[in-house]
Image 1: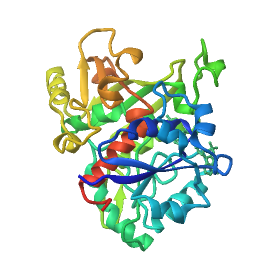
Image 2 (image 1 turned 120 degrees about the vertical axis):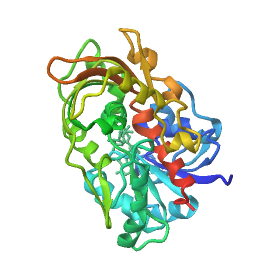
Image 3 (image 1 turned 90 degrees about the horizontal axis):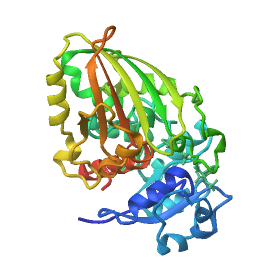
Length: 359
Ligand code: NAP
């Protein structure tokens, strides 16, 4: 298989660092460009990113020697050097929207972690196991942008990457109402305990914008392509409270769900066990073999024990039981910077390659 040349826009950030660890030995992708703000541009990665490196695994010597390019001023040059870019930058929403479309207009596809384009109607927002067919909106987006290759595809917010995968395959029973409380890691804010010591021994009951994302984004994932746009679904109804807790990585969700036709517990467990998506069928390099994993022990899944399951790309579920107000309740867990951010974007890029959108 041909190797694709890829750029990482926002390479010095928390998500950018994750991209580096995932891509350095990737069978399909070669890191060709690292880009960040004007503050970092022109310097070697080891002199900038190295000082802020938060991953357990170190970056390679080759990466350390790469000279960082300017993500906003060098778009044309970067686009000419790569087959596509991953994007994870901390900028204003309007600026990110414009920047991602600029790359696309220079015929450079963008696989984005940013929220800026999640609600653009012709931009697919994809969890590859759930709604891979949404990438078929790309020809419509290319028509709007006037491009042959260039487009923007995004992944959804990290908060919902545990409970939406668990609920989605149960749709045949008519999922009506979902109530979720999320317990979210501090890496979701680009922080660790050194950079955010106030989080030690603490819980903060507010994460700006997170509850809206957790309630609204699932409806686009449940949506359908109609003409040149993706029309969001109107059901299920989601309500969420999102809470920051003192863990480094891993978002946990406590979920309550009501169905039109209540399934048995055994039916739910069988569906989770047997669930496979297109990434598993295509055997994509970053796809977990078993996406949904149910643990029968009462005290599992635990953030620290299960977040790295299948390279942090699998979802862990436990404590499924009947509820007095809803039909069922359960807990679920996913790694927020792997499945929920860089890993989810890499899997999406693999899907786009396998389906010919990066050629
Ligand atoms: P971060 O650690 O603050 O990193 C931000 C990156 O953006 C750095 O590479 C920075 O470069 C670059 N940047 C900032 N201003 C720029 C500018 N004006 N022009 C070009 N580059 C600029 O942020 P993060 O946590 O990685 O998050 C990045 C994005 O991913 C955000 O949109 C975030 O919402 C999203 N996201 C994060 C997570 C997570 O778990 N952390 C999960 C899902 C999505 P310099 O180093 O040169 O300043």
